Amino acid sequence: MSGPSTFVPKSALGRWFESRLPIMGLIHGSFVAYPTPRNLNYWWAFGAILSFMLVAQIITGIVLTMHYTPQVDLAFASVEHIMRDVNWGWFLRYAHSNGASMFFVAVYVHMFRGLYYGSYKAPREVLWILGVIIYLLMMATGFLGYTLPWGQMSFWGATVITNFFTAIPLVGDAVTTWLWGGYSVGNPTLNRFFALHYLLPFMIAGVVVLHVWALHVVGQNNPAGVEVKNVDRDTVPFTPYATIKDSFAVVCFMILYAWFIFYVPNYLGHADNYIEANPLSTPAHIVPEWYYLPFYAILRAIPSKLGGVTAMFGSIAILAFLPWLDTSRVRSASFRPMYRIFFWAFVLCCLGLGYLGAQPAEGGYIIAARLLTAFYFGFFIIILPLLGIFETPKPVPATIADAVLAKNGGAVMNPAE
Image 1 (cartoon, rainbow, N blue to C red):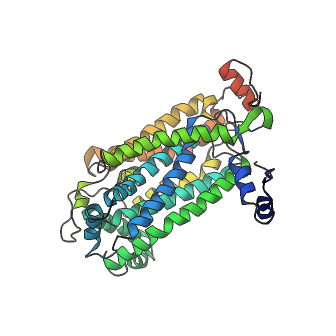
Image 2: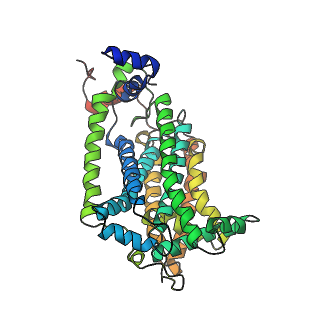
Image 3: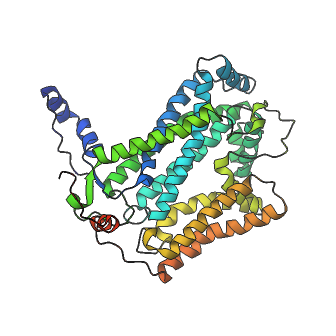
């Protein structure tokens, strides 16, 4: 979609270097001259926000590892040392812990936007699958990071999650023993989790590069859900139009991020994690971080341990099959009235599961979780395929320029004019 770059350096040294390693041409073609659909709105700014958050997490994480000690007798004290004795250590720790939550806020908005506007449909299937892989890596990284402070929730969260693998037939016990590095959660477990937590963000960065590459091959989706027909009429250059929009969105998001860091740094955490891990004292109510709560509710909604683990992982894996489960030829929900209703019902279902995941696994909470779990899977397996057959979409604009013209009620001007 971006095509070969027309960038020509002005200096002789620049031309010499560019002829041997065309980095500046790649950057110019991908982030300056890249044709961007002219009807993009601020829902398309979350890719830039996620890029910013990934860099922030990697930088703060690298600095924190310089002061953290991955040893069960010293880990909790080393975190307190970071908070109390390291210059700006409190800021780094809060920026990193709240950064994980902000990362997930942005990725959930990014994913729901993709669901609403059909960004997973052909020819963007590989782009969507790469996004699901990034999400899985994020979930693994977040879980591993949550265990490192070695507080009560860290220890017992690690114990509960790793015990899930024992439900796998034949190899479950062996996998769990390997994760533990022994026969219970202990020092080898913490060392493994620390090493993996340090490694996975760089794997995420690598998949993000593939994600952006795939995006530039097939081009960006847009609110109208139609492909670019005429580059001059349907698109604008990425810079300055998209860069200004994305930069403004990142600054607004940074204000929210800063508010959590400076005013309510522990709001999204759990108080029990400020108590050092004690294998002899089980917390009254073990809960994961908020961004795992919908899947935790699905896990507990199934009576069988194996069934619960299968449903939990299946609820994530099913996202990868979304391009083939949605049989409608129309991408954007703007032109799909029935789909819009079910989409917002699905959003409420996810929020409801998140609430139920934080509640005790008893009584009406379990019944409600089972009903919402049934709707969650029914949305993908039953509703989406049937909507493609029975739904009558509204007329879709022929081009992006027509969509802009219909929205604004005026002529579509060329940015150069």
